[in-house]
Length: 202
Image (cartoon, rainbow, N blue to C red; front, side):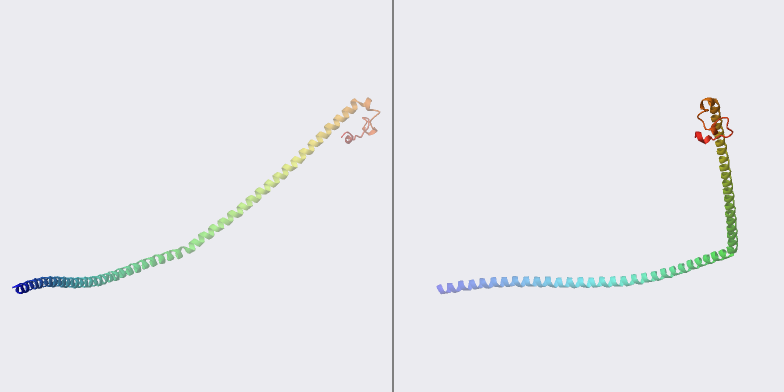
């Protein structure tokens, strides 16, 4: 009948809808389970990474402690070695300095004696040099005085000679021109006069 057909069609439709719903629900549930599995795996991976990171940090920490311990031991050894080397070098320097002081003090008297002798020699050379320069200066002064004296004597002789030449020339002129000048010359300048005054012709 028609109602039976409608009812059957309605049941078929409902069954289809139910099947579609169940399929969608199953798909949703499967997707949710997949997401949950992914989340679980992610959590496990994160936990594993975290544990690995912690293990690495712990290993690094232990390695750092061991390295620090080794470095500390090496540093202590190096410090001890450096201290020993420093002490040895200081002892060597002290011995060398002490030996140098001993050498210096042993030769101090001789050095002072030689220095005093050198200073005496320098003073003697200085005195001798001063005396030599003083004598040389005196000789130079004496030679200069003698030269000046000889120069003055030569100049005086030259002046005397010039005066004699001039006087002789005047007397010769007076004698040669006595007749012409007889009436014009003063009595003192006449050739017959016993005195002459050359300054009148200057």
